Length: 492
Image (cartoon, rainbow, N blue to C red; front, side):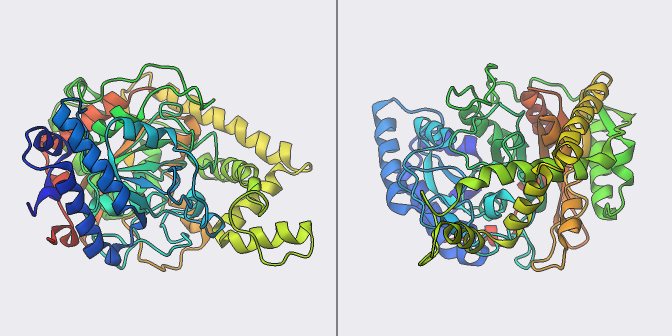
């Protein structure tokens, strides 16, 4: 079959269960697509054909024995920030280019238990620091909708792989929008769960109080299948919250759009730099939800101006602390012929880390230094609590909050964005991480250059089922999530 890549996760599961095709045939199909198409997209860092086919054969054997799960034999791509036993795990960095993980991240281990077939590891901004996937040591990933544009970041490889139909779904991580923004740029659905919903064990840390894994796929239904695998408490992760996970597939129609109160923050639609096409597509999607029975409620989020400075103090401070372990001593890149221990540290880190990672380490180290800790880091944590309270107050009168996922569509590769300009592009996403809330991106149309636009819906704590349900019903009434880039239409 030449069109297996066009099937939804449900259709793949039903096809495998009905013996319309085998997991080996499905896996070979995706591996052939990767071999033919990915040279143009550069979404994968490592492809694992031998392991994938072995897992596919094992999945087929389980199907024959009647012991298969709903996802047994379905392929997946993992962001290269998740440790994978026996497979190189780089976090997009030279400093980990030679690191073979001795264990699996919980997300990867759960995927194996569910019978998922790992196609390989996909590209990302180095240590998840960036919004374009250009800071990767392995080169920039391309946006399948326009190969001279970025796919977003840091989960740009995950987004590009799914958008080019080089994987049916993929894992991503979101520290300040790194699932939602690339999903928006690539016309996908991407869910950032409540902090603590998905285990962080085996996920290489950027900012520990902000990082959260989540699914990226074409539709809310596809994301729900992967969330059923990923979500749940993990004793090995001290930040994992012991709250029962939902059956996200069973709950897909659990929230009625009729009567849903959608908060529209005044401040979000008057941000300088909000592209007119993005604003128009988002407003059209909200009108569609209103036509479906939702009520639009204007709200105030008064802490909006504090989002960027607060995030870019806390995240670099935590990065500075987390990345001190990469010192050239225990594992990873080591400089050649160090003259002493100080030289080993200095040159291993300066040669192993890219400029964006070095920039954030320096900012974070400065903010944590003895003379500035109280003035910057402690104050940022206090403002963080005010941002959280701002959202909680809003949820007293609304069920979800709507916003663009990004102020623009995808940038051109190599666009001369200075760091501050790039950071300001995170205005709509970073507050969700600071507050620990769940949020989802849904594709809602295109700009004048035919680049995808995304709507973001933000929910209260543990409301992933509600967000998936609302987007699923929107997608039942629209077809934006079914649109495919030309490169995805190529056959093999």
